[in-house]
Amino acid sequence: MNILIFGPNGSGKGTQGAIVQKKFGVPHIETGVIFRENISKGTELGTKAKSYIDKGELVPDGITIPMILNRLKADDCLKGWLLDGFPRNLAQAEALWQALQKEKIKLDYVIEIVLDRKTAKKRIMGRRLCATDNNHPNNIFIDAIKPTEKDGKIVCRVCGSDKLTTRADDQDEAAIDKRHGIYYDSQTGTMAAVNFFRDKTRVIEISGLPGVKEVTEDLLKKLK
Image 1 (spheres, rainbow, N blue to C red):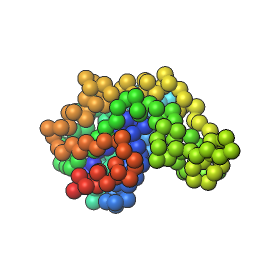
Image 2 (tube, helix red, strand yellow):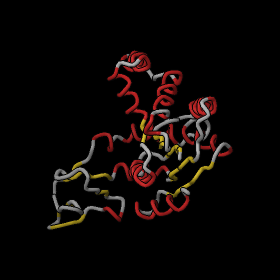
Image 3 (cartoon, one colour):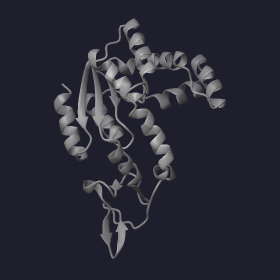
Image 4 (cartoon, helix red, strand yellow):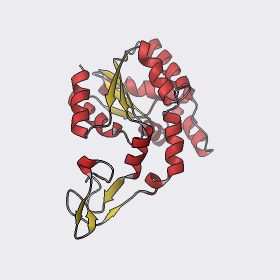
């Protein structure tokens, strides 16, 4: 089963992607990891990509897509894959589709986790990190994982630690707005990419509003 997964930052895309990976036994492929692996191994594509990255420039699709295709053709992808983080815009979606068609690689599903922009932003800014264990989920804007209060202090809902912190980038509204501006752009951005695939393959829309468990149940029910 070959899958693309989309969702704005704050939608729980990473969490649901990990669940899909485990359920179907397919690798969860992230473009950032592909870049790092190619650069660290000194591949021809990695060397070309590094030359752009070092200059602070975007890596051209003509380099990125061949890297992705090489990864999708690896042995551990024979039973399927879950691609996350690409394409980010309409032009990349068109280029990726053409490349998949040329290589006769089927795209079975596109998963879109739907969440409105206001809620997505609140969820990002509501994240709280537990100093005891960063894997303890706490978010002041999500009832299911909201930190608890003890002796007038906000504490971790899992272990009770009162050392809850925020990540600087989670509180950078300008950066969040910039990322979301690209994602929610239905003309040339990521939403345009999602819409491009609607007449190419099956697009599964999942509401990101409910809790993790409910979102997972809905996703796995539709992903058959």
